[in-house]
Length: 258
Image (cartoon, rainbow, N blue to C red; front, side, top):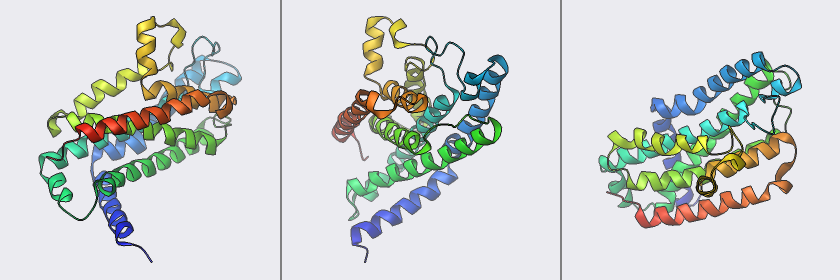
């Protein structure tokens, strides 16, 4: 028999799921846009690059340019989920909804945990669409351990979501939620090691990149993709956990309910 905590948690999760579906940027951005991006970029790379590497979305010189269309799309899934989180939290705060929720018997963990569960569930759904599109349009593109890749993406999303809560904690109003989160999150992709190796960066920029969850997400996802696996990229997985703990602790200090 479900406890009052679980009943409250699942009811709130269902409500947040309906809110997320009705929010165009979150729903379309998380479910549709990454698949469209993957198909468009994957098709472009396939037209340019011959051979077996092209079906994986990789240039011929993968060591020099570690770009991978599937990993880009996977990170876009996570980032769009975070943008939606920031927008919804800001709207709730500005409208006084967070204040009213805080006054209910539901604990802060239940209230904020419901948002996390919704984002993770839609991440799984979007990844499933990505896999289906890849196998349908690019034979061989998803010749990767899908379960391992999915777990890596969920860990990456969780870590990036913790940073999203920090952003949501300090964004002043809902009007600024989308542009501020976009200005902070998308530039992180450019220094994540997805488009060029970290070794090519200046030392200061490299250190800054290593403090960002997107950098370690790229490292872990790339490791799962190329077959080297978690054993080789455990430092990236560990850093994702560490950053999750650090950003979560920071968000609990600066989070504003009203």
